[in-house]
Length: 139
Ligand SMILES: NC(=O)c1ccc[n+]([C@@H]2O[C@H](COP(=O)([O-])OP(=O)(O)OC[C@H]3O[C@@H](n4cnc5c(N)ncnc54)[C@H](OP(=O)(O)O)[C@@H]3O)[C@@H](O)[C@H]2O)c1
Image (cartoon, rainbow, N blue to C red; front, side, top):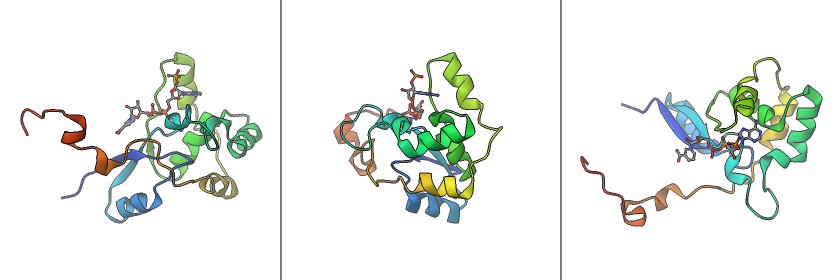
């Protein structure tokens, strides 16, 4: 028995290819959290917000789309489930409006090339009951 879906951090700056390949080999769909790179927005230094990335920006301009739309389209074309979050109706509509354009293989490769291997969220191994102190009543 394998899970149907594995939800992990995936965005242009952290692609987790080995985890994705393992999932693909075992029939597990990778679902990206932070698919437009929300986890990167407020960090300092290089590779801060993915939405400010010049490579993504150039692709967005070429298609008349936003950087968020390009990033979501990159995830979909690579076969992932993507679950962006927005509190704003206009952005929710924008994030769904990604089915009227297609990234070329070169554009996909350019976004792939942005991977830094730098995780934004916590290391999964560090997420323990001891660290977070949560009771799971029925466990
Ligand atoms: N399994 C896990 O461990 C885990 C961890 C984190 C998150 N998640 C789930 O994954 C979902 C998405 O992750 P996330 O919220 O970290 O990242 P995200 O969807 O990549 O980014 C969310 C951020 O992007 C902004 N945004 C959304 N659409 C935009 C657009 N079109 N243009 C510009 N900015 C835009 C949002 O601001 P506004 O709201 O102001 O638009 C918010 O600051 C969450 O809803 C959460 O349920 C799961």
